[in-house]
Length: 173
Image (tube, rainbow, N blue to C red):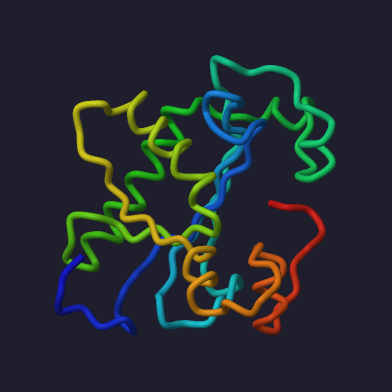
């Protein structure tokens, strides 16, 4: 990112993934959702359009019951899935536009618990564009919460949101 850009002017990508396992070796991506916004602004979903894509992968298997219960994604839902290369291109295009607005080579991607999402994003990148640089600078809000709120008993997105005065829907999507 450019050294001279103020936080109030920093355009960011917020991103979330749903998958059938904890990492690409144990599962596959089901969905990626994202929206753009400004780092110093309050989250106002009605102001920014969110994009969400169910992902059809070559490794597609039946949705485990626990994943269906947590996300609401079912085998029937996956009939609307899009090929992962199409999703990757759209995500990268969004990231490039953000990076350009920030006058940077990388797009800041704000992710809660990036230890989960990052391996899936890197796999998507390696599968679809192995000879290019990874276009995102990942910022993990779980890691930030761990450092800034050491007394908070839990740092999941629901706990941090509640601590900051926001509520979350029941499904984890």
